[in-house]
Amino acid sequence: MGWHQIFVKTMDFRYSPLDKSIYPVFFVLSMLLNYSIFQHIHAELIMEEFSSAGNALSSYCGFTDPGLCDMHEDAWSMVQRNGNQFTVDGKPFYVNGFNTYWLMVFSADESTKGKVSEVFQQASSVGLSVCRTWAFNDGQWRALQKSPSIYDEQVFKGLDFVLSEAKKYKIRLILSLVNNWEAYGGKPQYVKWGLAAGLNLTSDDDFFSHPTIRTYYKSHVKAVLDRVNTITNITYKDDPTIFAWELMNEPRCESDPSGNKLQSWIEEMTVYVKSIDPKHLVEIGLEGFYGPSTPHKVQNNPNTYAQQVGTDFIRNHQVLGVDFASVHIYPDSWISQSITDAHIEFTKSWMQSHIDDAETFLGMPVLFSEFGVSTKDPGYNASYRDTLISSVYKTLVNSSKKGGGGGGSLLWQLFPERTDYMDDGYAVVLSKSPSTSNIISIQSTRLKTFNSLCSWKCRWGCHRRHDHIHMQPDD
Image (cartoon, rainbow, N blue to C red; front, side, top):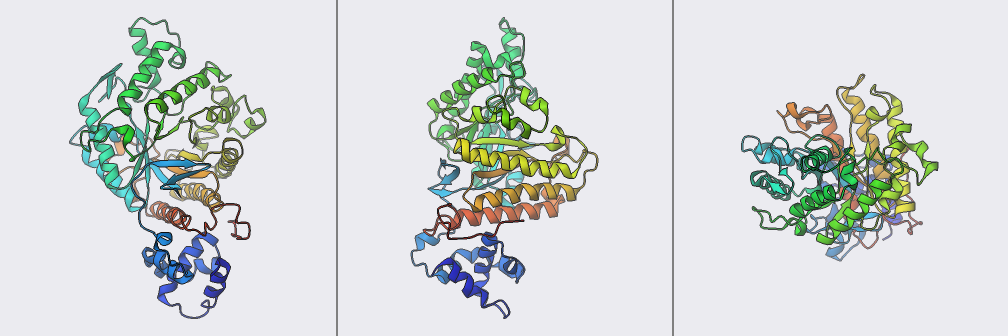
């Protein structure tokens, strides 16, 4: 039976009571088609029956091969990349995830360790499947790396616990390997170490160019990738719990607006990571600013300063070994701190520009790996935050319907209760934010549906070659 026939068949039930067995069909079709008639019929009952959606839909559509209708969790294997999509076991893997940067340092202390489990449990309860966090803390309080190549084993065991606990809750991790900023050490700490060793350094940006500092960074990469987890006994570079390695959080090299210095560093470090670990995906950690290689695109940047920070979205992501693009979304930092409708419009256009470029020029997925809004912004209210999150999610749903390059998003940032002292203004506490929690949960369900249905032979809505199947776009 073809999909259009299914639609016609289900339409027969519009004005009469529905057989309960057909609710999951309505739910799945409403998710994928966005036909408003499905979205308003017995919505609560449909949601209750979603767990049986796979079996009901396969039976109703006449599928007989149980392998085609498996709606169970994917096996715990490595995330891969196929063209402009993330995949697990050959099936699409669209991401709804979050950031919680402090997991390692909390895990290293028994008094705060429970908060790590708590945040994973809460994230899992709303279907979040990927977490981005720091695999660095250089020379500061509770430092992982106390000095070049000298580590605190207790803190490393904290990172071991983070990986172990993430796997329990079926959450994959993007591990960032160093910071551009001073928080948690970052490139300023590496330069301090270099100066203490007698190196002739004049700028924090010497992090990218001085051969000794590059060696410091490579040593840290090797220490993390070759680490054997003391809880699971799995080497990090072999652990499918890790989604990807991130070279650096928000790299910038303002001393060289041409971008050549940073480009050279990205080329060298990507190859180095891949030489140790060819299995995992690698991304750079960029914010998404357009640079000198695409002068016709710099008008898409949030401000003129963004093209002078030494990054170049297209050029940087064309480096051999980079598997997917990263973009951040902070209109309240980049445009104006005061909340306005212009922030929402910028978010939509910023995302669409990068999705288009990921598909057209890069041939890879793009992950919007940080986005959020600060409660400290003038004019902030919870309704605005929900609107921003919904706008991000809607753009990604529209992309995923077409099998597009919008690979997913990671909210900045998810916190458990009683961790306010770590809040930078962007924290989302799910138990205190029921409307936001609901929006996140619905998005997780949507993407899980896409991931499951796209594994079927019909490949419905996942590839543009199926032009005979029309999906009504969102307004």
